[in-house]
Length: 204
Image 1 (spheres, rainbow, N blue to C red):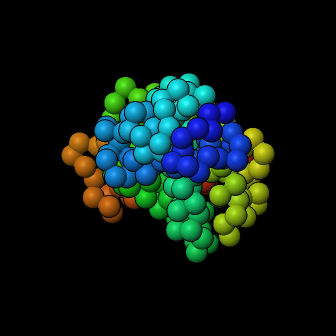
Image 2 (tube, rainbow, N blue to C red; image 1 turned 60 degrees about the horizontal axis):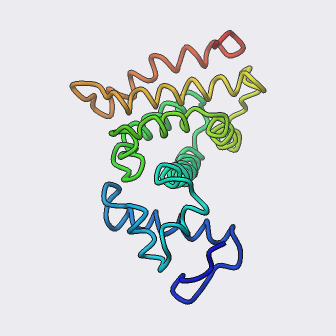
């Protein structure tokens, strides 16, 4: 497991070791910026060697992908907190999507993955089943009765995937010139509104 090093405080097991490596990577990204965060820097911060990191992550891309997953979890939680007071489904979705489009490019880790060849890693994670399930759970914990609107089971998953793909495309290829906050929300309402009105209609 590679318990030597660790600045005299080795992890209890592999799970703790992996978590500490992830925490160190996220701390390095916050401190140095994503471009200057390398396996060498993370290893030095922890007092371990690069081979120790390789026991838990196959490459720097693997480590960044795992860190991106944590970042996505944090963003999902933020959206859940922000959207909890909405009672209208369209209002909630428009604001949640707009919030992500406006804020994601400024998030250090996610912004890097969206701007470089690592974009593929982030793009896949944004629409993979785990991301859909996570976002669906967040929406289902709001005050909206989605089932009354025709969104249950696969229909709800389709709605979430539609929204995630909209966010993905507008973050990767932003409007030029950029829309104002009000214009962005008007644009989103123009397309999200009909989807919500369709309810039990076909999304696929």
